[in-house]
Length: 102
Image 1 (tube, rainbow, N blue to C red):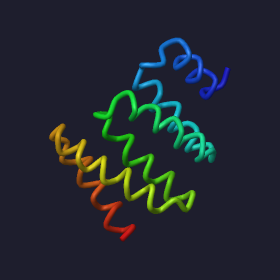
Image 2 (image 1 turned 135 degrees about the horizontal axis):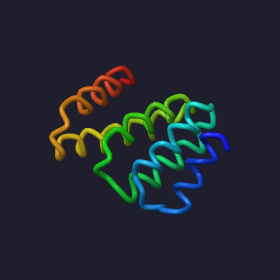
Image 3 (image 1 turned 90 degrees about the horizontal axis):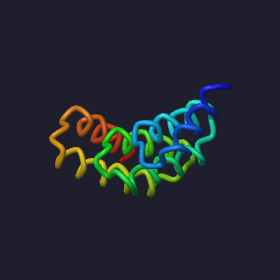
Image 4 (image 1 turned 180 degrees about the vertical axis):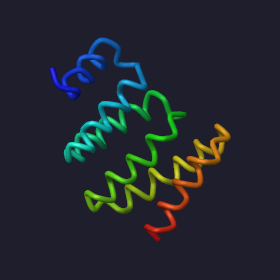
């Protein structure tokens, strides 16, 4: 069983496992299935808005899909979430991505 199938199985067994859902989204993104990655990132963030790394990677996937307004919106929500969590590192990464996007 490949990594994608393992992650799908983990999410199927526990749909609220944020780490597994993040891994699944990243696996889709790394495999080039950006639309599916965005869906998984959105599911993750709907269930766990404090999973701040997902905002950055969702924004990156949206940018690659040419959905720039959606990327800006995700980055904006990520800045708020990272600020609430006190995650200054991720907040700075998201801010840099947003600045590059313009």
